Length: 257
Image (cartoon, rainbow, N blue to C red):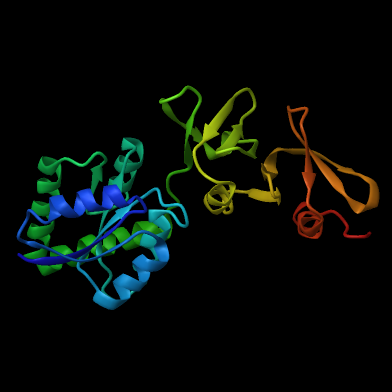
């Protein structure tokens, strides 16, 4: 059975590679490609493809968040998640995605995905159940509460969000601090802000994101400025003046000047 699809990945090489492999299957008709969330949503609105091959690790918005938006359309698409991290892939599949594919892509593995999509396409009730299952889980569950980081070059590990005490912008990436260890995140502080904003974290300075649950003290400083002390750490983190009022409200501190 024929089906239409778009490919979404912020890495042009990965996008081109996946499109090339998919083009080998006559049942898959690629109608477009996108490199970010905005273009993905615009492309989907225009072509309304049956399937979206969607990278999980996107810089502006995660693939999971994009999938949540797509799920709100009438007759939403099936989602096939793509990722370089197997832990992410397995969890995505358990959430109800029709399938997942790992980077680097393998044609034999993708052939199984195509076969699964073809079987669903030939049975409308099964297709609708697959779409509904993913939509349900995306609405009810928050996923991937671990951050891919490096402590040793070339070794990817995962730090649970709850273990992160604070994050500091560093040249070329972000330093991640837990109670005892320090890690490196290959991304931007803005990307982390998007990932962590619903997990009890707050960007209190252009260079810092903190776990609000790990605040030990707030220290007043001169001219209405403040510093935050993180529990178990000696580091004092500055608070931007534009953030002070919001932070006080969150912490229940009287907002007197």
